[in-house]
Image (cartoon, rainbow, N blue to C red):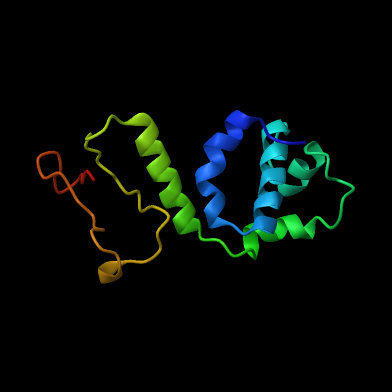
Length: 128
């Protein structure tokens, strides 16, 4: 089942990040994910996209764990797409990083630290 032209226009900037076979599998997974109800798993996406009888499902799982593409490049592409779409030209943006999932500590992480508001903090209660 092909995707509508409006969706293809939105995902077009991501096309150079993937090989042709990976892109075809990704479009199949995207179609199924958009149509699926409930949890969006690879198997459910394949069922809803009509690919449940075509080939090995493991090939579609490999898009996420073995295919050669860069999640960092994809996230950069997504960020640029959001900025170009939602912000007026020349607008300033402030990026705030949530490090709660980051396991590394210390000098390995630039600009990461624990900041506290001394006006609201006391010996018994620390804010921040």
